[in-house]
Length: 220
Image (tube, rainbow, N blue to C red):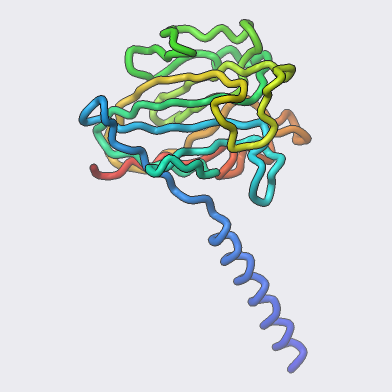
């Protein structure tokens, strides 16, 4: 009986250790910051890297988000106010390639149906141009899909681990969308980039903090 009780206690302890370990390792939430140039709107600044460089999976591809103090946080938990225009800037540091489904290259749900890529406003992203598409920012339940052009892996100043900086090779994509009612909405990249997993859809593709996350829309 004593042995059974000890085994039971050890089992419960291991379960609790795992639960609390998960909670401790959960990435932080980064809130969009009020825009100083466009009153009534907020700014959200992100970057995507071929290897995040930190955490339990430093070699996994993933997103970073910039907080109000200008510091980069390795997370995909984002918070924005309801009924507000959100101005998004994404610095894409990863290499790209051809799409398996052309739908992933279609701009959807942005203000005006356009994005601004390296200073040029476009309504269509050609996946066969340049270095192809690296990743996407997609919120299916809100109808938002934005593809990002990749950079050449042969660049002399290619960023190998995050957080990357603007002196390294990147593509800058800017777009806006307007939030509706409050809620929590799952978002993710739809370009398979989980190397070593079946069809590239495992690992970082399905893990919060890397290429999947949640957009929290809260009361302003």
